[in-house]
Length: 481
Image (cartoon, rainbow, N blue to C red; front, side, top):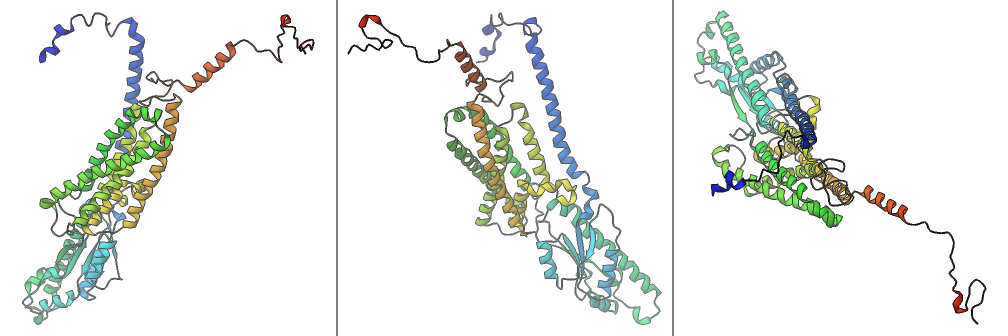
């Protein structure tokens, strides 16, 4: 079998070929070198566009963390609540840490949990009765649980990366600093007192007066959570890109022979079917792997959850497929990677970061299908930060707009094909790579004009041919009657 690669089978095949340095193809080589330099310039633009979009969204992330607000809530109302609140609000503000504010509108731990799950990033709660329990322990009570003094409430399901990097660390670091500072003040005050009644306290409460427990009201801290929706949608998008390019390259006969209304219906239906299939695979993959990696505290994964997961992925894939196919229908081959890069990078960034941690330009992430799909998935799995109306509305609006735009794109593409403006691969008339069996419409007009000019001139008026041998003459008026 390897004999087919033998040079003996190629004997004489190269006799009619020339060297790449031959003068006969020097012009062609020069053209190719120029084309490759253009490709290098286009590739340079594309890679810098992608890198700039990504690093522009993350390079200032650590100095924009104070765009996130976390809250201290005093439900104690005593000395512990007052002192802890003051210590928290006096925490030094740096660009790399969230801003601490106080919330006066919540009156129970459950109310704080519900608020954080719905709209907040996190909260430090001074629990009710913290002052009374500490005073009792300092008076000599045997049992004291320092961790009952404070509760740290977070919601990793809102945005996993931002919660883990900034909110969770800010809550824990501040609570630890408050506990150390409170203990130092309390020990100092104890050493300075002369009251004998205060000389037999609960020393555990004296040394460790306030502690904390952490509660995640919408846990998404399972192993795959930061990248689960990101790489699921990315795999779908990359799979779609290959299909869209194939459709672009092989659709020339359709545009040349099929009616516009059929094409305008066919492509969206095909894209919807492709999106349904690929998103089904993503939902099945998550279903298969959720066992060892899914947090036991997260919401129960039901049949309805599977279908929500599936159809959310379908909406994301469908909107992105429509968007990219609009570009692919009109771009020449060397430019087709550009919309892909400028689509993939911002969408990926929208799921691994959040607009609070990016410059204002990146509020376009609100419109990214990845962002809206990921927000829906996190809500479906954790119940955190419900923005269902906005997310579904954005996806539906994008699908409607992109479908309308694709209809227009198909109409323009068919006109370009039928008039010989562009060929099957997307090269336009005038390019050295252009090749189409359909004649260019201006050339057809020019040929018609040339043929008209080559015809003999026509006389004005009516020419009368009169034959004298039949005795009838229109000239003399003799009609033979």
